[in-house]
Image (tube, rainbow, N blue to C red):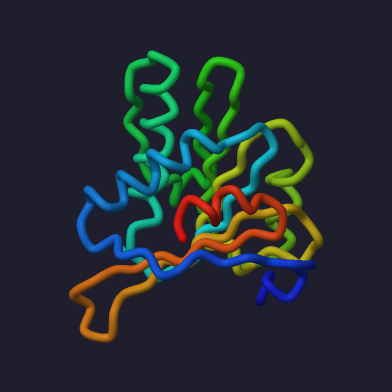
Length: 164
C-alpha cells in the first residue's frame, strides 16, 4: 500500500547518510526541535535499518530538551504500542509489524486522538487516508554496508528545509 499517492503536494529531502549512529542521532536532534502536537511520523524500511533506534534518539532528545531523564525506548513489536509523556507532549510509538489483519487496527484507535505525536513503524498496513504526515524511508545500500534516510512530508516543509 502506498500512502504517498495520497499526498497533495509533497516535498522530499535529499538522501541522508545514516550509516553511523552519530548521524542518525544528529537527524533526531534536529527533528526534536520541530516536533509539534499532532505530528504523525510514518517509518518505512526493512528490519534492522534503524527505525526503532531513530525513535529512541528522537524521544531521548525531546526528554533532554525538556530536562527529563532519558527513557529506555524499546521496540513495541510485541505490545504494539508504547507511550511516553514528555511534559505536555504525549508520544505514541506504534509497531504494526505483527498486525496481519486490518480489522485489528480498529482496536488500536491510531488516529482517534489528535493531540498526541504518533510514530508508526511498519505503516504499510494502514488504509490510505488523507492525513498530514511526515514519512521516513530508511534503506540499506545495495551492499548493505550503508544506511540512508529520505524524509518526505505533505505539510511541514521546515523539516525538509533542515535536510537539504
